[in-house]
Image (cartoon, rainbow, N blue to C red; front, side, top):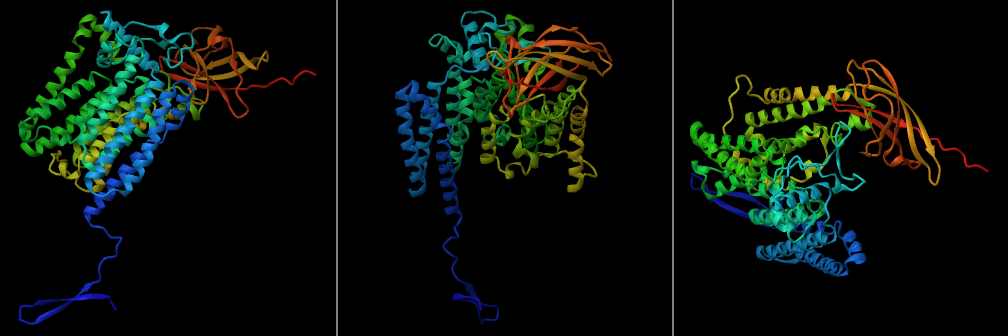
Length: 588
């Protein structure tokens, strides 16, 4: 029989009493919505607390060698992390949890500052931005100016191009360098740029923390400052961190922009931030069209077509004026150099790198004669996603802050930084853009596409051209068939001193190959061609002798493999062959 703890008496229409059974009380582990919300809050706070441990030990170890006071601060942070872990589970009440959230945020900022104190030189992005800031401070041109001396003789961190050269110029919009210019007067090095990006990350984190609902705030601390990922990019001087900080107020509650047909102060501020973000780094360019499509759909569902277009025009106009205002000085200095500098990441034909689909041709096959099709696939995928967002904004609008980065997975350059650096925007959408806010958004009506199957087929059709291009790039054979003979010197340590390459051009296009070696994921500096033709005619063979940069390349370990890669810039191709290393037995 069902367990009953009480009997309820109710009157029926005939005046008689009716007896109904009431189930026993719920078990103690069943919580109401308020308790669930508090447990969610505790979980977020605890995750943020745990995230602060990651990377802290290595920073403490480094500090003990060179900056003992910083090590002492990190040790105190360890104590604070442990105390916050206890408080996150022990305190009662919402206000107490908010105080713990604030403490976790302060600890995270302290650890980021210590990390900057220990490592603030920056990588190639930070070095180039620091030099651009110096140029601005002295009134000299920024764009179109090669600065090879910044990288010494190692060329480490430089972007290699498929034409066999390196990129020594500044290829980012100017805002980060503008912000670093006054700082450069006090820190005359790349540390000025890394200070700006680190400060932008902290400011963006605090902004996101304040704008999120209370249970989500510690998630902002974890995503932005915990786990050690974004602080590392900030210490490296990536201008994308500045763009991220500016995009945060744009992404939080973005469907509310222009509500009622008026931008208001908040809407104007968001438009200014979007324009400034586009003037800080090119990644913001990919976010902007998705945002504009989403805003138009939401406002048209509320106001109608013309008022929605008017709101969107005002928003886009304020963003454009902001962007033009930041770039005007540099465009006036030299329009052609400035314009080519802004487009450089899209036009430079950098060498393959990253974790995306291009790895099929770079790591898992012998190459491809149609690498350009990866770029076509990326562009077509972007167009397909924009179309899908317009057609199905009610479903895809909540993922609007994630969609812009998907095309990079198909691109020639598809390193994880393009995804990781914008992950706080994902959190902003998850916490502040519920599906209900898009329920009345306008969507174009497509006849005969009303069922789920038809919509799925339409989405598949939108991305099919990109998939076909990616398939062509991945399945194409390498243009050069290479046979290698390796020269090895064992004095004082085994090194590869030269490789003789017999190359056969299997295509109907003349190719100008450039050679480098690869152990693992990254290509070495360009090897020197000591003999062999500069251009290999169609369907012809030639013998090249190539020497590694510096004259020698260490022989890889027992469980490593060395590959020689030959790349061409026009058309973009890559051919790969394994360098067989056979060591001579030691003499008796």
